Length: 385
Image (cartoon, rainbow, N blue to C red; front, side, top):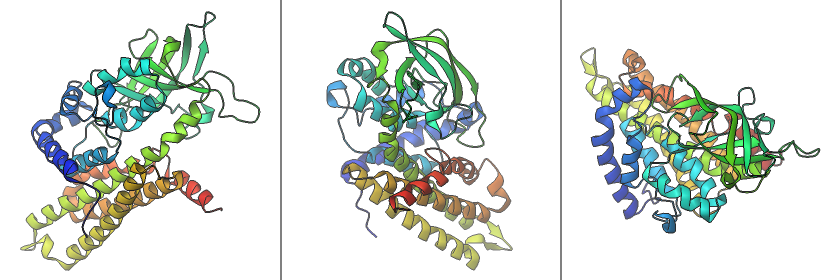
């Protein structure tokens, strides 16, 4: 079926991005995997390529494009090549919407030029040890100083993607206790300078997948954050977090679909070259049937992802629809990648093959951005159940 989600501008960007990946990423990717993160100057290259500025308004130096489709293309092309851009996805897909929606003009002038160039990398710190998906239960506090000039931040965060390289972190903290009828009240967003005294990066977490993405623990000990770096209004942070969740879940859904498509591509190439009992693996009926079934699932996931992408760009994607897309696409990807790894035999278990890295990378899709179980709760609620 003809795909209509992209136009000529998108395909031109795809070609540029594919050439960049082949020249600047693939030759160095094994080194990045061994190091457990991409080099910091790689983000400058992404900035020069224009990846970070596409959705930034023109008055702050960006292209002013109001569309998530270019970020979807990044997901497709990195998955196709079996690589990752490290924590930069959080910088654009998660942090930028908050800056665009809630930063003042003065804050945008300070932060966005560096955001575009890669000089000022952003991360967001929500999750805390022991709280998981229960963001309203966070313990990190930010108390306003007696003279009203700054907040004093104390607490810790974990699972912070981009946390090692970040120059600024959007930290969710309690600026007031929860109210009697709303435990979500009292959370605010502070844009914290990582060079501030008392700010510390703890362990760089050792994950089973996403090895080039620097995921860290953060701690704050009497970190002074100027009131000028409060993002949005005080005590309204929880509502802000909820408003960006559909895009976050769309991004995960699209990434999962792209990974499933890449798995089929890698496996087609492998079974065509691999010989067993004097015949290519691709010649066996089981191989054909397995890959045909996988392709059918990828086609369905692509249709769901594309429909959600169009709805998001039109401002019509609901929280329940985003949850449904995430649930479906991540479940499809888990099945497809597992079946494709099986067709690789023992070599599928070797990290030198991209299917093995996909298998590990894909697993977190059903956890972050809201677990599959949370997605089912959201969908069920929308059904009146």
